[in-house]
Length: 262
Ligand code: T3D
Image 1 (spheres, rainbow, N blue to C red):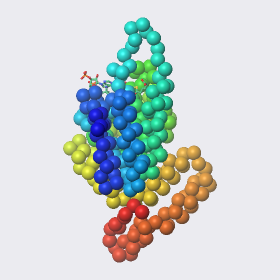
Image 2 (image 1 turned 180 degrees about the vertical axis):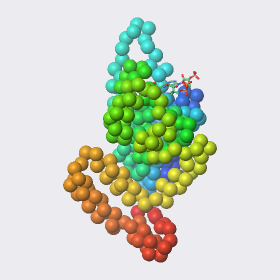
Image 3 (image 1 turned 45 degrees about the vertical axis):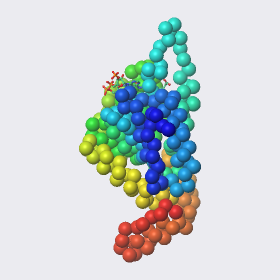
Image 4 (image 1 turned 135 degrees about the vertical axis):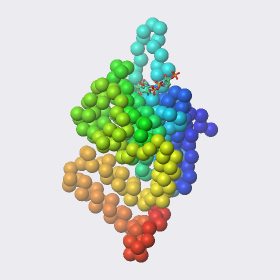
């Protein structure tokens, strides 16, 4: 019942594939509605352990579908904040708040809000031929969908300014060197990367992952003292989990842990 994304949920791990390959998976209102529906399902799933986002075809996501933005003949203007508030803000906010790792497997180019979506994910793998284009300035806009928040935090002000102002493409190799993404993989390793990461998430210490995500995200707004308080609170909770008991047992028995996510 999805037309512009594919969505599966197996062993607690959701996989969303943006699926408008002939338009480089650019965002439409329909795609946003379908993404919101998939996120509803994920949020309601008690045994959720992770989410992977990727794209069909040669691109990951080219941002807003500009064919929905054809200039009116009379030259009239539109309020661009409406779609941002209605669609992009909830999407990015919900992905950040999801209490499991959100991993992007970037199968190709990410531009405009597509690049912001990548940066909102907790971990990013990109194929060698993938690239980022901060396309906004080319059409007279600023990076949105959280782009101006994520970019400087990930790569610092100099690189954020250069990339955002000039909109040149940033290769996957540079993106990794800059700290914009976690890892570049060979193009022919796309499927293997997808299956490895879904298996890792399905077998991971889910509550530790949730705590790690929450603490790392909170750190940029916290003092060291506040962060210690948060670590104490979260580590106290993790000390009572089954996965911690199993982790300790596995260490003592010199075997890999079998985490249940509880
Ligand atoms: O409007 C609001 O609500 C404000 C919100 C804004 C959020 C935004 O995301 S603004 C930024 C929008 N995105 C862009 O400006 C990117 C536009 N696309 C590109 O710059 C390039 O396509 C890429 C750099 C992404 C890839 O280049 P390339 O050479 O690999 O592919 P291509 O040939 O340009 O694209 C292939 C096809 O996809 C092509 O169609 P065709 O010629 O085969 O019929 C192209 O028109 C189409 N396409 C690419 N991006 C979009 C798109 N169609 C609609 N919307 C797109 N964003």
